[in-house]
Length: 247
Image (cartoon, rainbow, N blue to C red; front, side):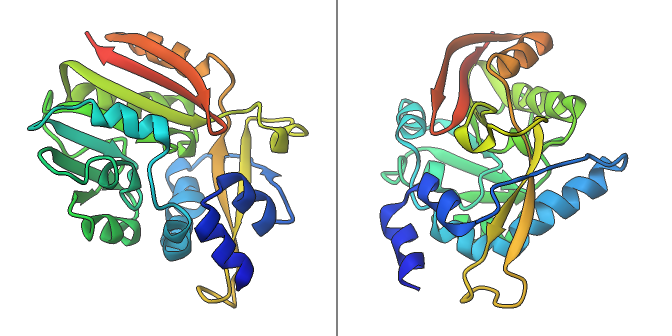
């Protein structure tokens, strides 16, 4: 239990990964029924680990916070794959903006709702927002949970659709170059989440699916879609990150 408190106090994602799981990762084979595959290896998992997951993620990463804070009063800002809402609630706690968060996990969104954010249970492949309705869209550590290139492209097209012309987009995806994945022979992996016994003493470990992005892969995907001007590409918190503007 002291170890669990350490995770919350330190807020260290790297420590969480290495201390909570002795088995670092597995290599994933994506099934033909991708809807069922993602339901079992992404959506169902987050429903089960929501409380513990949220306890270890309580504030926005600095560069994400800096990005959304640039939006002025009255802006409409959407977080796709928002989880517990940490990327919006902290940086924009002063109010004055319209905050929208969507995620497939109603359990995580219930936590985001308590932070004063409008929430919608939704799949990133079909966002429940009007075309050109958002001034800013962020998607932090979500796109890598989609298991095919076509689905990742569809999600990006949906984010493009809801952005107004001149609106800003920020995407974070897990990077393939992380040390803990050095022995991986595929970009598709499962990563175990081990629940503390206060959350679930009977089924402690749940495997989540990730597609690990190579350097330049996200930019290539966005360029193939068209309509974006990429303003910045960088590496942050073991993620490849791209900031862009809708032309």
